[in-house]
Image 1 (cartoon, rainbow, N blue to C red):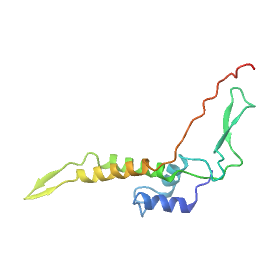
Image 2 (image 1 turned 180 degrees about the vertical axis):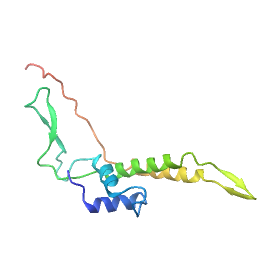
Image 3 (image 1 turned 90 degrees about the vertical axis):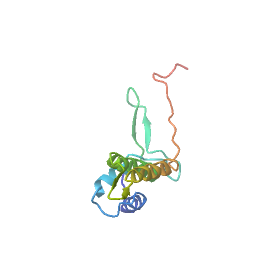
Image 4 (image 1 turned 90 degrees about the horizontal axis):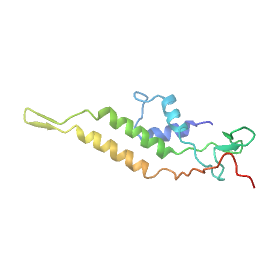
Length: 132
């Protein structure tokens, strides 16, 4: 399952990470790879292998690598929010510093992308299969 450099660049723009100070390319690729989704032809990333007992999931050879970048962006924004979650507001020499606004903005961005992620369903399959 290959993540392309275009996907990495797009996710970097979605999470406002122009450089690799916080997330290097490997971390961005890993975030993307966590969210495989149906490709343009409706092929799932994994298929049920009934040759094993119990059946297991294997990589679908007909699947074109397709990932949910909004789900990955939501995760990264949540991580960024956690990093600044301990920041607090304070006043000094007549000035007010409201650093909690950064936390709220990051959570708002996370919710924005979570609302745009792909719909997912899980097919529950009985095992062992019922006798016909």
